[in-house]
Length: 264
Length: 305
Image (cartoon, rainbow over all chains, first blue to last red):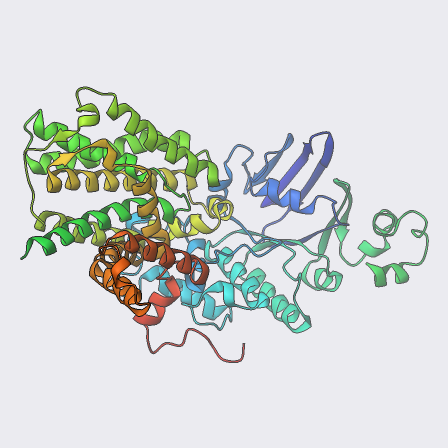
């Protein structure tokens, strides 16, 4: 078997005395789509923060493309091909749409001239043209010069995804991409993510919308109180007794999986 | 050119350079309330090197930027660990320390100040201001400039996007300190005298006001702010006393009127400042406004979103 793109080995972190992530391991192969699910407070976002280097784990290792990145500072991890979106949209409010996307290109090694290359004095720079093209390609139909703060939620969510894509990542971490979206927008997002995945980008998705999880991802890892309780196909996840117990409590866990599906 | 106008242009040019110095720090989200301290460093460096060492003007002006920029760079590392109001107080304290050191230093003339033997006319500050403004426009148009504005908005996300947030902040703070020092060097030669009382707390506050009220989102802001607040008091110099006597005459109280004075200028300035804060807290000039002016035919808002 080929080396997995992302490999999480026995990851643990405690805040004070509370073990938020307890000995979690999973692998994610190149081009795969893995959903990370679990009840509120299970540690999903904490895993993302560990992966992107916002926190440093107490024990365990993170491998990306075969390299251990435990000691790589958060700023440099994007250079290893990892980009992420955020649970609450984190666009730069005073930057325009296209400028936000251009920030996604910041760490790309193929950017010529690095920091002191002018972007806007002599007409449209290559960086700007490329960012505008990526926005159009991904179907974000707003004026590139517009302020992001005035845009509707669904569009800002998309722009954040495009910003992550502008880094040309191998691995994309999506923290609740469908949260706050209506049905139409969720449908659009699905098509959007399908296209991203088809272009070869590996997806790791935290999501509560089980319909989206099932149609987007073939595999799910379920966390509860910081521990991995399930790792397998998304089709069977709602029949697993441990998962049912985590979501519904021990009393209801014996009841039919059909009923559980409606709740989860 | 009359002495009055050359005086105005000199003052305006120095204020523009000074405002850009503070702007570079503010653009990364760091309020620098120690502007007077950095300007004092530059002014005294130029004055001392000119008076005691006999350096030519180009060298003293260069040295004023290097001295203030170097000290700003060294100071940036500890001070930029502070955030928000603590950073503001830290920079403010720095300016007080600079003033305290100068006033107690015999070599720098103490409270007496230092005379500067070499004089520059209005044209040198004017050229310097144009160059500094062009430099700042260039800087803000680069990839670094974009990163600067992004760091201002969200430093955590910038870090994850690969921006060296600390480098950006330290570099811009130090560069800004160098420009503030350069403004001090221009001041020393233009007024041929430096005394530490000039570089007081209200100077720091005023220059920060230029930047915040002009708008810190684009490089137009400090230019507009410095121009507005340098020229407004001059415009009000004659009109306000006239308004005052008119008002007194309206109530038939000409006899009890005090002679026209300048104090009303500062009242009007204060009122304008408060109104700006209330109605346009992002500053006179915003990015959206620049975008709309530079692309007048491109709609910035699509219909039916």
